Image (cartoon, rainbow, N blue to C red; front, side, top):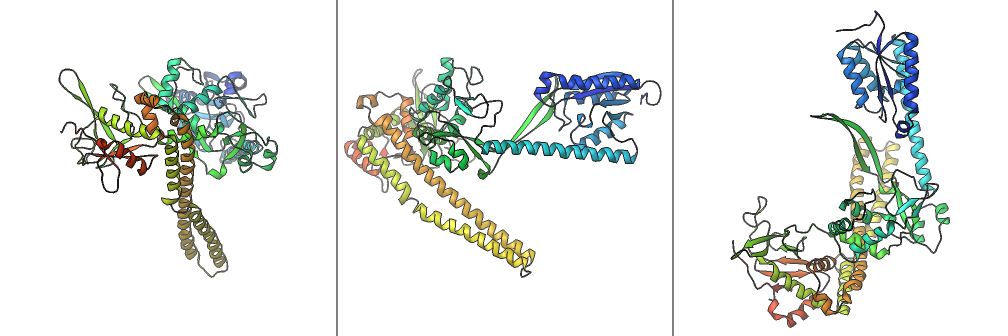
Length: 584
């Protein structure tokens, strides 16, 4: 192995690293480090083989372009020393520093930093190791102080500024609060109106914005459905009253707010973010990428920061959230729009969503059908006994005839919606308040028993093994109670959503004239079905069962008016699809 150690001028590599973008842009830190290294090398008579820098690279990982270059040069031989200004320029972790040292020693190369305190003796290595651990501890303290400072700032009702701002807002001059950006907020309001009131899908909004040439928040051409979804889910756009805000913030923050105004909520500390750099080897060479990971924090660790009201009605926000919560991907058949796609039409044999099918007829004409996805020869190993093909045009026409007739009577539709909400709140689930009380008392009992068992163990009346078994049983009970309470909360929220949807639906469609309902496009009919939570089940015996935000009284009334559509079945109010379609 070639080495010049011990004879002639030592061939050294000068290595400098900075970790932040600010240092990269200023260039001061890199230049300062390299200047100090050059002066030291000249003073000691070293022969500088290479100057290597790692701008904007963290010392928490060894996966760095510059460090990879240094390791390759050392492995090639002829390098006596790698010199840097501070020991943590090589690595922030003492373990990584040790690995580099051992790796370089195999090639006759040493690591050297200008701030080394020891020598090559065991005592000197111990001193440097202690200093490395102290430096790591100090960095951890600094990071913790920074984290606590951000938490304190958020608890004081201030925004913790980052590189980006929520779409529709902009930072204030002090960068610790939001202001409404009237240039972009109208687009946000439009998103909520299109989804919550007009029934647009996320894909349709994306297509509309791109067709209009509307730039994204980043100034790009193509919109992301994921971004639109996140906007709808973000509490920063949902108005909250002062009473609601008071339950989430400190009294000092609440005292700064105006009582007659609504506020959005910007959440801080919702997730724990970590990132590391990894190297990916390709045919064109090594590519360095940041690998990020986010883990949700418990809800009680979130911090609410009030922000100005976005100017979007609360019922519209909640309606839009309900739509994206229940939406499904529409059919991509391309030749026509399938009104009952998106899981509206389901198989009565297996409860799978029906899929679309195009069947060639005489000449170049195509006939369109709905069929079960799991029929013989369908997807998956399991098959379904539902072999029927349903003519799409006739089925869609019959379903719309039924639904539109209900909607032509706004008062009846309102009664149906209110009756459905009442049934959801009482008849189907029992008394939610009583159930919540029982499980809350169960949680209090668990805490009392936990405290009692711990007292017995402290007095020596119970072994620690026995205590562990008892506490494990209590923990299972606590998890069960928490789970049941969460289910009850979800039920209550669902009932509230139904109430908000009722007003949106009535406002948007119930006041339409009959001729307006008749002229709705297939896409608009599909939007109506989504808002009505329509479900159409195609049974194996060729009957169709319809359910949604209307009751059996409506179907009985329609059965008398449209006897050609209906065939009575015990316990249900289905209507008969007259065309059987092709058999396969």
